[in-house]
Image (tube, rainbow, N blue to C red; front, side, top):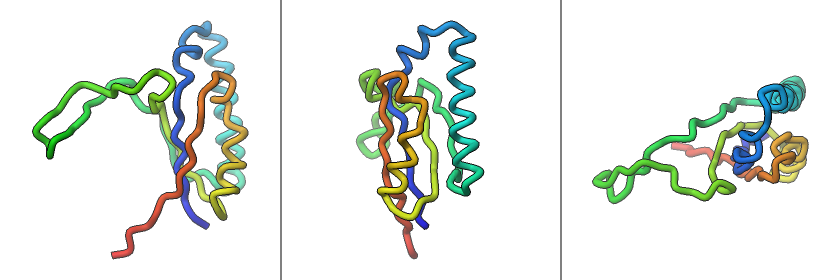
Length: 115
């Protein structure tokens, strides 16, 4: 088994236009999906990310407010899952509720640094 990173991009604009009860209903779908991953032994970790941050560049000499990605490209959160391979990790991501908001999930294998 390997670990894979799900990067959740976009969907914030549509989500933020929902009523509080609609937002709660959507978050409950996330809970059900994540609980299913957990019960099958696939969920390792994951959290939403705050919308504000800093971008550090030029060997640490330049620090600016960020992120500066377009709304559809903004990373709003992540999960780490355990799967046999990239195909299995990709298939598991298809149940993510983020797709209700024209958003995407980037699936990347986390490589180990054997030192």
